[in-house]
Amino acid sequence: MKFIVRALLVVLALLATQAFLIALSASSPEPTVHLDDRAQTRYPIVLAHGMMGFDHLGPVQYWRGIPQRLQAHGATVHVTQVSAFNASEVRGQQLLTQVEAIVARTGAGKVNLVGHSHGNQSIRYVAAQRPDLVASVTSVTGPTGGSEVADWLLAVDKTQPWFVSTLEVMARGLGRLINRVSGADLPQDVRAGLWAVSSEGAGAFTKKYPAGVPTQPCGEGAHEVNGIRYYSWSGVGTFFRAVNPADPVMALTGLAFKKEASDGLVGRCASHLGQVIRDDYPMNHVHAVNLFWGIVGPDVDPVELFVAHGERLKAAGL
View (tube, rainbow, N blue to C red):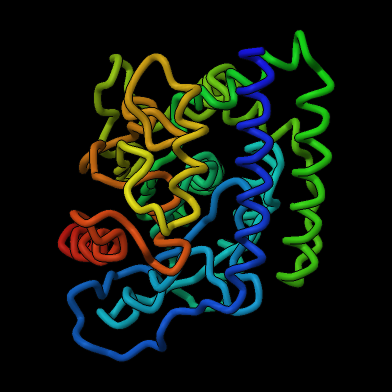
């Protein structure tokens, strides 16, 4: 009975996520108005989304209001799109192709990469393959050490394969929906994506691409590798606003965490990469990119965190 209840909770979580992505298609951020140059970085900022992500679905932005706020403070921002579900290296190669195009088109020389969630592995892959094109790598609530939610699902798959297979069908449908609405045509591989963000998958990725990854439990990684600066930040807590549809979903998925505090999908220490700016902001995994009307907790503005990071990069000459 306990398994059935938990299984139903995860199913409801995925259904809720899919339903609200569609329901929010009428929501859009305000237009950009130039204010100042406090975040005018030397190199463009490139945003890489996480699992189930997109650049936009109609007027809905994955990075809700973040590009506009950064641009208002002088930054040049490019939003990318890769497969919603796929292996880390597949998504990383898709991002690399776009980064090469951005550099060629703008003549910028390098870019500042910022990845949310599974975008952590995408930007680390690009930095490893083309360090000459990357000035900095910043992970926002990224599963550097994997996710206990993915670990739990893979464990369930060994005894109740029908359950994960059902989720796979649903997630594949979501990936196709994202392709259709966003105008993309990207391959989707749900199981490869799930394994990629598990502890085992994340560990295998780190063995190949270790730059910036901590060598001590819950420590910091190297702040600079091959001339590239590495940063990360993340939050803890799952339920802050009842009116934000992400909060009950994160509260459900957060039940999978036994080792450490989490934001609903990624553990506090598991998020560490390079210089840890902070790992306990009061926000859940979805709040970190300001999704769902920008209704977040009372003590942090997730959009302002990106502007502050733009200032940080600018001060570092990046």
